[in-house]
Length: 214
Image 1 (tube, rainbow, N blue to C red):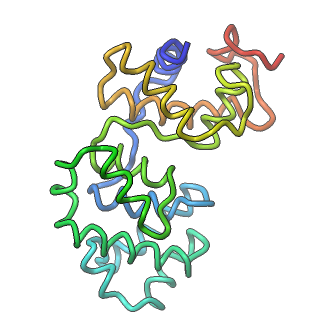
Image 2 (cartoon, one colour):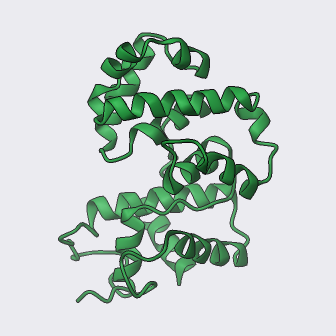
């Protein structure tokens, strides 16, 4: 059923080409900044960083904390996130940066990322998928909501890794590509913003025949 959901969403909305970023490091920045806020706020913070040419791990680390906090303030929780950005930047430099990390095993790399303060499972998997091109699925609140309504899961707060592995098992069975992993996550976000909201708009929904909330 998971693959069927993906195909229906892809037919409905087309490719999303997510994550919107100019470099892999910008993806990493976005993955940190998007915690507990919406993407519009993240874009404002990223634009501030770009205006001041703070777009590399080295520059994040050498920027005074108070200045970094001011620039990323639109994304909220700016005191915490400024430190998280520095933590991640230090990690990337310690590991000889992003291109070197791409060579590592996915699960090994995931464990390393999760040891960095400020990086939880969703953030780590976003970095792995979109910045490091690893075939791993990102689970967010939209995915949990959609899968619960489709009765793919029994509860909306399903265990993160259990749900991730459920998607990955289905995708491997259908010989999914890296692009499929990226597109499915993006399409779920798109669908849940437009149709499967907290208060759903079910009329003309492409998943209507699969949905159990009626």
